[in-house]
Image (cartoon, rainbow, N blue to C red; front, side):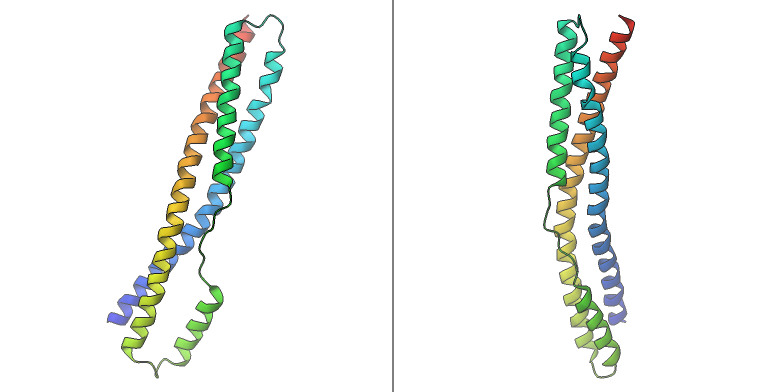
Length: 165
């Protein structure tokens, strides 16, 4: 019974470990898409500044938009900056799995439980470490998304004012 409990715990922990590793890639894809959006919005800034007769207020708003979008790019760069993630050693796990299947009858219950406890301990360490990295990336992505939204709203407002002038 204890062996099955540790095996269940190991499988759950390993699943969480794999999901944390794949979350990093997902966050990077989202950040890359957001970076494209911010750069697109930022390309409008110089065009609007070239409009003849642009009021000082709109120039200041446009400069604020440029600063906000620039900050968004800086934050996204921090999010996309490479980090050292911990991954499980697939070859070791395959070898361990094969060994456990071959030596099924030779190992005592306590030896199997000890192996599972060690594997769980390593997986939990990776989960905690990778979770911390992903949590930081998520916060940076959220900040940059808000900066992009604010920059977009400012840009739309400026374009609307220019359209009704």
